[in-house]
Length: 204
Image 1 (cartoon, rainbow, N blue to C red):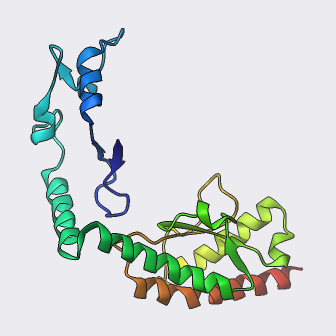
Image 2: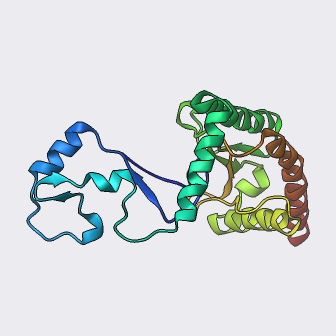
């Protein structure tokens, strides 16, 4: 299993973490690739797992401040109640947006089926008929303008849709985000939409 530090708990984006099961270790120790591996990818030496990698020894030299930062984050997570508390924070954040979307005439979930929705990276679509009637480029421009307004006001940063995703918003609701901050954002979404919609009408 692999994961990156910047997901959910934040932290340095350049680091990936690797978790090996006993079966994975057994496979590593018994498998000999037919091609040479760069040193940074080698997890075995002389047919045995290089256990030092998992005990703090480094191949290249990352910033130890990054490690301490993540250890501090894990300490915070443990102090507030561990995994259960982190999940509760994420669920509360996503629920705040869920309530807002349920009452919104212009916003909907990108994932129609609730079972397929992320509660951390919450992706939303602009379902207002006038915006939905625009072509793909027009919808993307509308969403980009909305996001830009929020950025200029210092309200929210980097909440635009993924590059290859349908036009809309993507709001991070991970465990490090305070629900009060999510709730403070929501009226601003209505404001930014109204501003963009007014510009759309004026252009027409």
